[in-house]
Length: 190
Image (cartoon, rainbow, N blue to C red; front, side):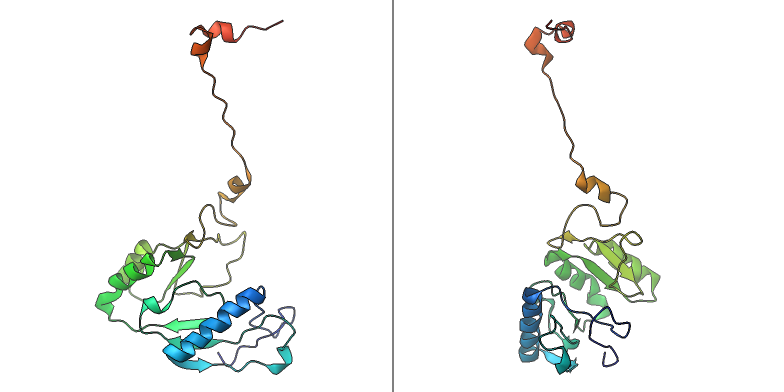
């Protein structure tokens, strides 16, 4: 992560751009502080002082957490959480992750086909990536959207996305109001 360049995304040399706004930056900064205090910080890239006041930038950090319960919300920033677990406990861990209610993206790195399939089937997430990067979905190429507390409904770029912008209208007429005679309903008033 020390090889990654935090900077203006308009510059080709930048790998990590700014967060969306001051609130997002504040959330990431508070989360990093909590990780430094209660977990084992593995590595943290120092922030380039030249970026100070020029946007909502956050440098990468990696920290080991003791439990999935150390995470209480989604954190959208360059923070990697590492949780050690025994292979035989992976489905219990998946259940604990699912109980959190968040389900934007779930990543799996495994060469074992059965493990890939079991975790992918059990993950309650809108996007499951196996043996690839977990960020950077391209709208129109890779549908993107979450489940549960991470969003519901059609995925941006997916085959059902257009329906999210449509409104369905149903008109229901009670023909018994005309004495049950449907021909009376079709008569002109003129």
